[in-house]
Length: 220
Image 1 (cartoon, rainbow, N blue to C red):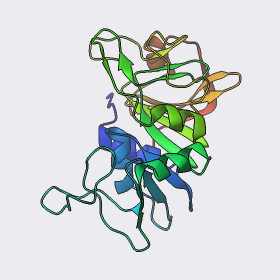
Image 2 (cartoon, rainbow, N blue to C red):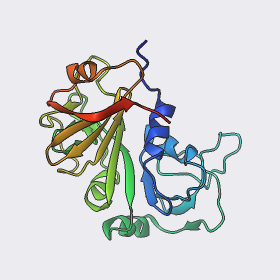
Image 3 (spheres, helix red, strand yellow):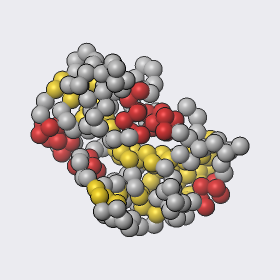
Image 4 (cartoon, helix red, strand yellow):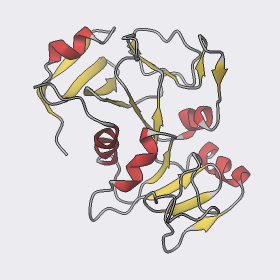
């Protein structure tokens, strides 16, 4: 039985990529959920463009503090050693290379790792936010997104047709159907959602995928 990953599972899989001591910036939506799923025994320092460093998991609205939110406006928990500063300082951290990993949403990712995630031309709306700074300044970029659009259009493409956020910047793509690594040789299919085959993933992916010899189902 084919079972696409839900948003929480995608965030959990992305969180597995975070290593002990990493400074990590989380985008809005699915990426923001990753702070809830840090593997036991790992210490990850979360950073947000609105000027907070070292926060913990998300909180429900009933438990949140209006003065303690991430860049997406979600309530986050306080942690020992957490610090606050201006957004200018937050962006200086990004631009000076102090962010080890960022997890961001995506509208399109190309076969060479180009990212488009800030503008939908057909709707005429978009917001750059910190995406371009992170695409240029973060050490590793992980993209979480649905594999195809609601109307079935492919989002992993040979060349981005949407305005590009960053060129050849994405390292890993985690969708509801698969985990795909961006390499100099092309896109490597590493993991598939339960019940899916490499052929299933290729059918909804525009570039030719390289199937890993140790291809496996996503395990958490």
